[in-house]
Length: 243
Image 1 (cartoon, rainbow, N blue to C red):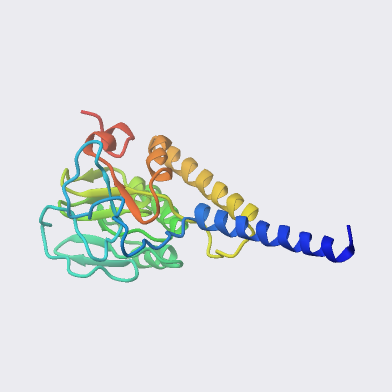
Image 2: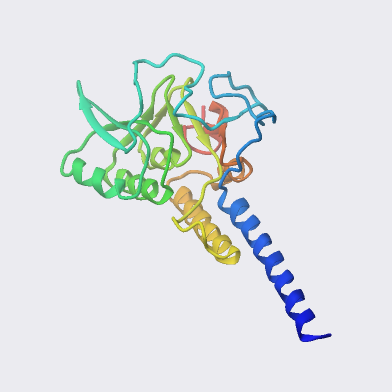
């Protein structure tokens, strides 16, 4: 084969490999592919009631709330995790962003709230794990109220609470998520990063007394959807006591 032909073949192979790599990165890091305008969503909105076997909902927490009325008008959730204290209640609300764990831990400082009320659409997984371990070390409980949400990475903070309280009309949800900030890694490195992150989460859940099998729902739910755990599942996996 002539040198020019070999070069063209090698170039075609390289382009093919790059295409496969890009696909794997998008699939494995779970950057949700945009839906076509004419395509129907795979899941209904979060406002639709959840029933056994019908638990996937579109992941648009900035727009939707569960189908029950919250105990208070929470308004718009903060863009960054925010700690507030009012009438003896401590609330931790908003999106979990890089650096939030250290900031919230500093704000709590030497204070010892008995319980943190959580409401968050999720965010940075690593930050949630740090906060969850801090809560466990300090013996701080966690709770989610009726009509409020704890989605994506938020259940990892919830898991750190001791004890944990979850209203039957709260929405606790899990799904796939990425680990790390670099979404332009080669595919094999991206997969390695994801596997390492998932392993860290499973060890953490086991340390918190949560059955890591809850990850079976997370891993099978796309990043643009959320799997809402039923009360019986919350008990089965250890978020709530049995009985």
